[in-house]
Length: 219
Figure 1 (cartoon, rainbow, N blue to C red):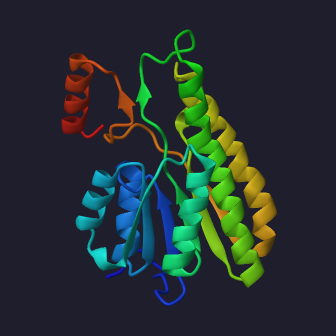
Figure 2: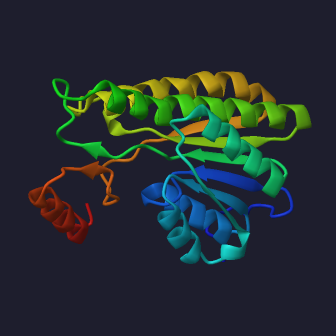
């Protein structure tokens, strides 16, 4: 039985998922290959990518890619891999985001961490989506793009680099939906709450213990 009411067409559909080694990105990438969709699993960690693919129902449909999407050259390399391996992407999911530390509040976060958070969430998301859309439009093919934003796009989190990156991404989704929609490319946002995926790092034994307790509670 298909997970979805309208199954994908393996002959037409392909996917690219960033942040596919962890959390929601991993779950989405695994669900896609489980539906018969050839999917690029992109992540900064080779170990996580390997584990995510190995735990998938159809690992033979997965294409691994490892790189740092904070670098524009890495984004271009990812697009090149997707083109070479799958001949084009119809479904794009942008879940990649650097880990967050509670210590990086407004008075402490440094420029490098600020820039990295915006580069991965916003710059990479925009660049990848625009380039994938250009390919779909040229080929006159429909597509769907999904961005993972956050409840903190509209609510302060005491992590200004994260909240502002997600807020900008929420507006980017609206801008892209307005432009790409006329070309039959849907653009949507998924707005999750807290999940046990290691997104927040406290950098202490107490933080690790808190994360372990939260995982057991299913938070």
